[in-house]
Length: 113
Length: 119
Image (cartoon, rainbow over all chains, first blue to last red; front, side):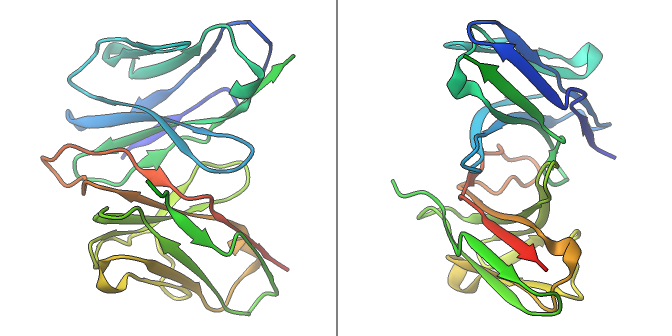
């Protein structure tokens, strides 16, 4: 069975600090996709990134970076120099070739000015 | 490009009443999803349509929930009768790709959701 764990329920940081959101997944499939979504207070989920299981290259997009490690089944998300606008709930999600998308429980990030 | 539209944004009903939600996906998107998001949890897929056919409804409580996607465009989700535990945000999403085995899975585009409160 597929599972996504986000152990951090809530995180608070002061603006300009770096913060890492953890995601650990479980699957027996060799082909799968991992996602991160942002859900701001407005409620609309916003797609941030998709990685497939064959591409372990880390990715950087502006202040965002992602570290994918198959050896530890982790797909962590780092925000550098956090800003108040980063305050949101962040979801990690997993999809295998033969199953639906499974979302983690989410991590609520509060960036304090 | 217009995003995924949902209505209503908020709905308050009493238990045992019926309610319906509407979703209009992004033009040209073949796949449409309905999710239930209970407060403090991640979204849970209720049903997935590919055009107007059902791909996955394994987590849809079929004794009270129903959904349709006529003509492969917009969709309605109905709850009849509602229970207290149905209080949640109902999210609609669409995707240009189906995510079937062997195909590239495209990201999903979400609507603003409908917040349902059952009293």
